Length: 71
Image (cartoon, rainbow, N blue to C red; front, side, top):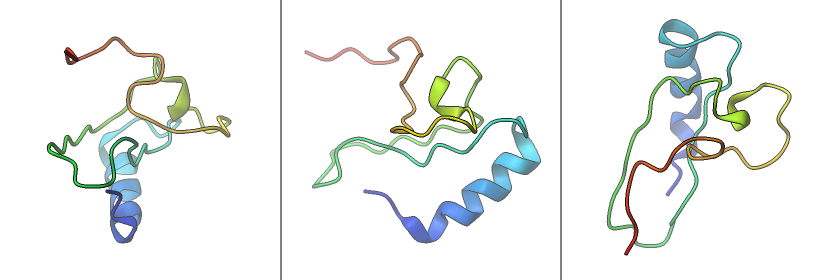
């Protein structure tokens, strides 16, 4: 679930600790009864959705290697 009230805080953290040329990525995935919540900080330039010009879905896994295995 996305907690939109935290987006401004995420942006502040990104501007302090992250690359100022990259956008925050607020999340994407299961929003109804998720069994797990992961928080990723400081998206990398390898994630094309962190580009400020990216107008499509912004998700932590776009353009990156899988970090989990799905059965």
